Image (cartoon, rainbow, N blue to C red; front, side, top):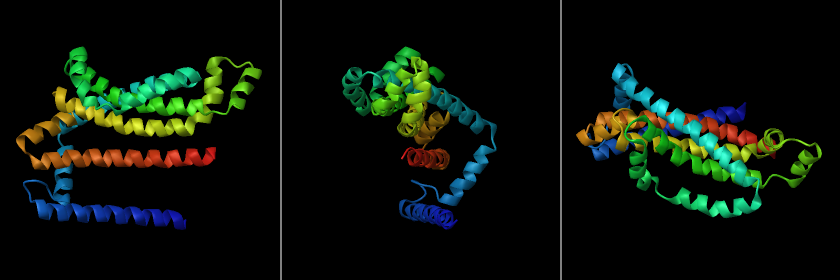
Amino acid sequence: MGSSRASVLHGVALVAGLLIAWQILFEIAGENAMAPPFETFRFLLQQLATATFWGHLLETARAFALALVLSIVIGLAIGFVLGLHRFSSEVAEPILVALYSVPKITLYPIVLLAFGLGMPAKVAFGTIHGVVPIAIFTMSAVGTVKPVLLKTSRVLKLSPLETVRRVLFPAALPEIFTGLRVGFSLTLIGTLLGEMFGAQRGLGFLLMTAIGLQNVRVIMAVTLLLVLFAAAVSTALVVIDRRLHRRAA
């Protein structure tokens, strides 16, 4: 009970500190560069009451959801296939790490040529960002599963699919979930970048348009909404991640 209360107090103190720092930065930078916190919250609530803003929001949500599902499915498939074969894992790991370090924005012209403008390009660009870390974490997690578990599955004559479902996945789940947490953040970034540079709808498009028009209020409101969403989901994922690791330990 005491630890929960302390966590809540720490969270409140952190939020209050961020709001104070935001207000101080506004006083220094001025209204041409930033909007104050309470005005930004008020403007965001006004925008959420309009059908136009919800249209952009739902467009981004659909693209992000599709990209995240594809990132998870493809990343898990690659990670399990490579993780089950040590030689393949050793060969593929440096390649995946190199791909992970490449700035994905350099690939965007190829994505546009392949998928054109609109939803497919946004989904593809989001998937490109999220699939590699999920594959790397999954491959590493599967490769470090205790050999005795695999021997037991062979003694029990489990099929490959049953071995993955009943042995490998539960044993590797904590590390896999860490990869999913990283993949979530990067998929969101990739989807928004795709909307900023190759779409006509979505929060990324709205943000890019506001930047071109120097509309500070829209920039701050959209940024605030994205930060609140990412922070809320990431916090929940971190809590689940820690519980999985504690249970595994």
